Length: 176
Image (cartoon, rainbow, N blue to C red; front, side):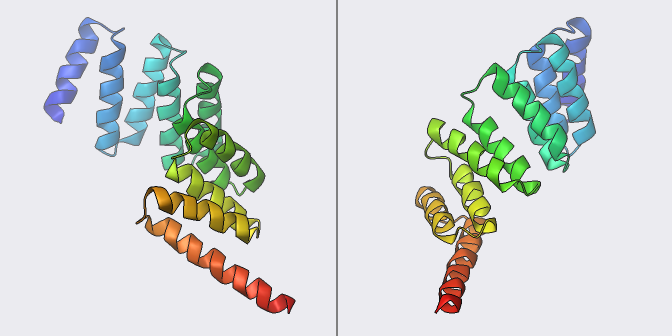
């Protein structure tokens, strides 16, 4: 990795506007767990291409990884202003809202992601989680089952599904 970093830095020294070198360097930093360097490098790339939705999306992803959900939302919204059809960005945005316990926005954003890509198991899982937290267990179960139809062995999704089914049964038991 050090050799690749050195090589990319040499490329950038010769051509500081090489966007691919900036992106590759940011991705290497991320792979090494050097999030701050990765964030700084993506920011450098944005100085060259401020309307690159994927760079904004990657920056939002990094902010989510660091628990900086409000920063993630700003970056992800910027990415969506540029390209509203990036389903991965909608899904990443839904994660930000889910982590902030804004379940209504999570649901809204998941629905937008799923209009673009109905096979996005993460969007289905986030949708199910939001419904679960709103105590809308039937909707949660349906969404989580959709996720598991796409990828059957999603542990987190299976766990939330079991919780939703148990909560639904408990609610039904208490209503009797």
